[in-house]
Image (cartoon, rainbow, N blue to C red; front, side):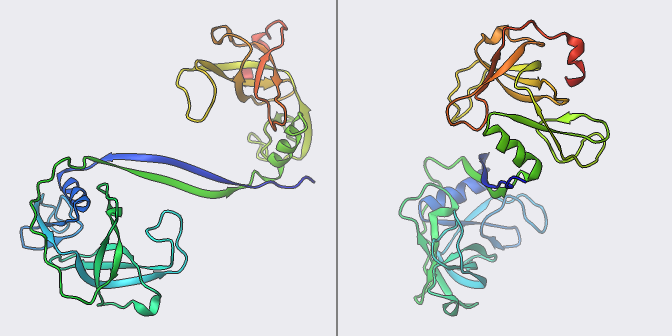
Length: 313
């Protein structure tokens, strides 16, 4: 039995969103080393600010500056910081009620160890050297034994206000294709394509899944298919993908390999994009050292009859 493969996989994309007037003022203020909250109609000051009172749901927009010093209300020690967190060395996650605020702000506290952190300790903002209008403009909090800082008293009207933010979303995980697809990948490295036959309906599925999607029974019998096949359907791609060195337009197609009962998808080359058609007979083109075909090209054979592939559309 071939080795079951596994590999690290990263799914990442930037999420861009606009910010309303309250969040815009808060983020722009951080860029200017000013911490702003918002005052509710009953006199509470919320930091970070929100646009609606969490108790009454009333719209609020009365901005007020608070001090960059405050008190830790609760905390948790982070002994192993992860990628993208505020500090690269162990630190404490803390909720800090800044002087003048009635709610707490979550951020990192730079401390030598958990024994140096306690509820009720006094802390102060450590500003980032370069600030762009984001929560990371507060690099972290640090222990502070001095008097409470006073608000700067600066105007709450800032030039070049922040209007939007980009929040990167990322998921890191280890992917294993399992027994059936590991065998499929190993065969591709030998320039062969293998599927598995269902013991009940006798259909051959490529790539194999280890079970028949129709009958729901396990599959184990390997069947080599192709290498030639038939284009069953296709699309023309007109938008160039990032980090993909293929000129547009190009064609991506579903290809039913000879002997397979399920079409797989691949790029079609060696023919103008506007001459690709259903029924076109194709074969794989490999590049040196590749583990899978670079693309499929026409074989020169007559087109397949529609009746031979209509069930695979």
